[in-house]
Length: 143
Image (cartoon, rainbow, N blue to C red):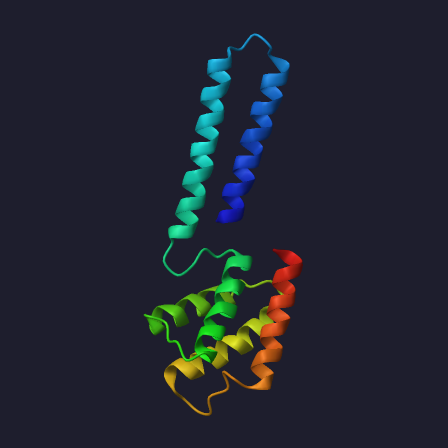
């Protein structure tokens, strides 16, 4: 949804730029009003995506959330709503970029296992840290 809003904003800004270049008779007030409307539309689209329950769906944001959550758990801090945290991770897992879907899903499983207190806790394992390193590397390269 964020990408769609961003793309729409880019198209509107391009159209405004072209129309301003092609028509020198427009008043500054009209051009300024259109620019303000475009900024308002962009802000609304960004706010709507960020305010969605369960995360934004943006890969950079969601990968960062998983990394931060894992680090918090490693330090003994629990999320205020573990069910919401698990739901957010599971929701994004289905749409994660293909190059990170495996490490994202594996870290997700470690986090869920830790939060549900099932099986051996792997949150501080070397394997979890290697997976977090892969996610951090991807985030550094793409965000």
